[in-house]
Image (cartoon, rainbow, N blue to C red):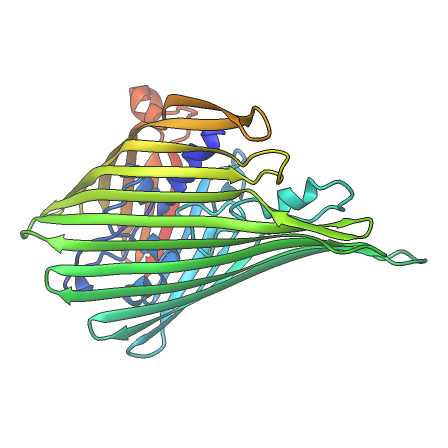
Length: 414
């Protein structure tokens, strides 16, 4: 369970932002690999953030991006975390974009994430339910509108699956799943020293199973994610970047019974993250980082008068994210990052109808160095995290069998 908690916190806290007075200041390169190489840094700007706040699309018109991801099969044509997206400027103030993602989409919670809290697994675990096919191949459409110093964004996504059985005689069964996502984004350059960045994301994954002469079995979730950041320029080189995120997931189920159906709540999840970071820039050098507080709570509703509510979760403080980036030359960029998580986990188990047992433990999350590199040639960019062992191999890299890049992102600005 702790591994799942750490993974969720890691995905939720990967984002990027920067105070910029002019559109021309934004470098139209980057991706998930860049953010990961800089210590999963929440205080830098990157085109990947369009997937979280659709208003950022106003700064990335005529732009294609995607991830080759990490290795799935040796010398294969597939990878973990692959997706693709493109933005096109259709008028002076309007940019339209489209994204294709899969169930293994990486990054902070987005409308491109499919079934983030496993609604399909929940319904498939109900006895008597036929196989509901997991969601995949998500389609997202986004639009951004420029209104002077203000940018507005809107995004919508949809995916679905069906598994029907129609016998020659009698009635059949239908197992299905679907998800619709909505994103509302806002960017405002209030002054030359203050930028406001806020977004709201809604996701509605659900699954159902219909069989003859019985009520429909169904499970549905509602996921709400709110992100807010302010970027305060204190000097030409130093910027203060506070960051806030809140995510809440809840849901319900309906199960047929002999005389009707039974309804109730499913396990719910709540995530809160507050970061206080900074950015320091000097020429082509960027250094960003800071501490953060994070809490994750998972509540399993009990049965009235039989068992109490049970909860488990994680509280992390401090969570450190640091990253640096510098240009070796016009065509190559070097990166390094560090992340460290210290916190405590808690879990409860039933002791009686009204009492619980509780366990509280100090735990440590993923920590250590990330290394990365970026290549630029004309309109094309390739960003990658580097396998640490490449440096340890030294001269053995010549003819060595180890993989050089761990995760790869691509982009084209035209």
